[in-house]
Image (cartoon, rainbow, N blue to C red; front, top):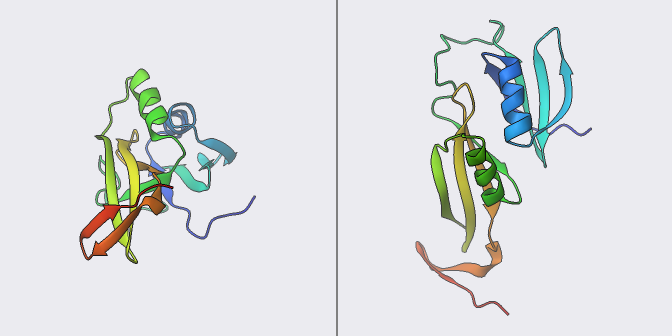
Length: 150
């Protein structure tokens, strides 16, 4: 297994509950776990994340719900609509409904379809699907148009 250069580790209040959420509802894969440490290493496509039940070893301050304030984790997937439907079927409320965002970079606009959901500890997860990134191009800063498809 190849480890990504950046792999966030989230302190969670209940490893069993978090594993269920990530594995059963979000579709992550369990790469390995250490039962005694209440630790799990998960992947989804090319995204990797570690979960460890709160044990005091990494705490830099008081941990209070929602955890991870001020950060969201973007996770690229192939089908945002399918995930959104699955979450709704399981009664999991989205933090933000599906939206299409446009990101400008190097005279191009990248179009992403995204949803946001909070995990059981309040970490904000942004699932993102690329939508024909080569179709949009900037004419001037902040002024873009969609290329005609051939």
